[in-house]
Image 1 (cartoon, rainbow, N blue to C red):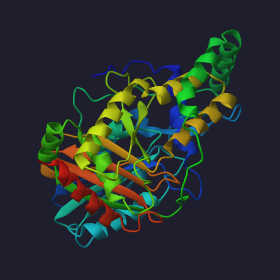
Image 2: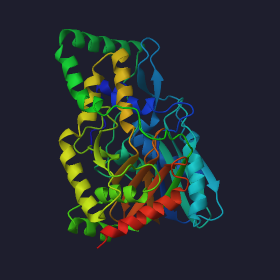
Image 3: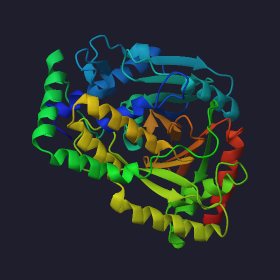
Length: 433
C-alpha cells in the first residue's frame, strides 16, 4: 500500500493537460463527460445513514474524492483544492423503483441520471441507490477528470462498499494552497520554455502524431440525446474463442460494433476508425496528479467480410499501434510544464482526439463474486461518456465470469440503444467457438 504520509508533487495541485481536455469537452448544451457505473446486489438498499458511513470510509482513504476544482483568479489556471465543506450526504440519492428486473425501465432511469451534469462547485461525483425492496442497484457518476476507466472501476468499488485491499492506491491531503503557487508554477514553466528551447521542440515532436489526426469530423454531426443500454454475455466462451482465432476480446468488441452498425451511416465501408483507450496505469504513482494515465490506440472498423478475418486484422492493428500509443499522454506531459496560456490550447487540441465514430473500452473487474453488506454482487457495469459529435461508446467490464456491456448511444445515430446492443451480442457469437 502506498505510504499515505507521502507529500503530493506540485503536479497534483492542478489537473494535467490530459485531464483538462476532458473538462474542455464538456460545455452547456453538450453531453456530460463523466464515467458511469452500476453495481447490482441481492437484497434491499442500505439505509442512508449506512451509505453515508460507507462512503465516508471510502473517501477517507481516497482524498481525491473530496477535492474540487477552483480557477486561479490571477492566471486562470485550474487547481485542485481539498473541499473544506465536503459532505458525503450531498452526493447521495435514494430511489424506490417498481421492478429492477425490468432492465429497459431501469436503463431509462439511469439514462436520465447520467444526463445531468455534475455541479462544478463540489467534488465531481455522485451516487444513487435504486431498490425495489428485493434487489438494489448502486449507480453513480465520476467525472473523467478524476479517473480513467481502470481507476473508475477501483473508485466505484470503494464507493459502494469501502472495498479496500493492500494494493488499493491511497494518498494524502493536498498541502495548504496559496494563490501565488499557481503563478509561481506558470512562471517556472515560462522560464523553462525560454531558457530550454528543447521544451518547445519536444512539445511539437509529441504533438505530431496527434496533429496528423486533427480534422473536422466527417459525416453527420451527431447532437442528439444520449441513451444507455446494458447487457451481460458469458466471458469464458468468448475469451477462449478469440484466443483460438489469434485475437483478443477488445478486438472482438471492435469488430462486433462495426458489423452491428452496418447500414446506419456511422461506418463507411471498412475505412472508418474506432479508438480504444489504453489504460496504462500499472506501476504508476497515485500522487503524481495524473488521474488519467490513458493513451489512445486506433483501429479500423471492418463491417464487411469474414468476421474472423476482421478479428485478426483489428488485433494486428491494435498491437502494431502500441509503439505510438503513448503519443497522447506524452503530449500532455510536455504541456504540463508550460504556462497556462499555452497549456490550455494544447488541452483543447488533445480533446479533438475523441472524434471517431466509435469508442470501445474494456476494463478488468474482480474475477470472482464479491459481497457487499454480506450480500452477493450479481452484476457490475461501467461506461465511458460519448462526447458531442460522437455517436457511440461501448464499454465492457469483466466480473465473475461475465462480460458486462454498456452502450452509450446518440439518438440521432442510434435510435434504439438496446436493439444495437443486442445486435452486438449476436455478432460476438461469431467468436465463441
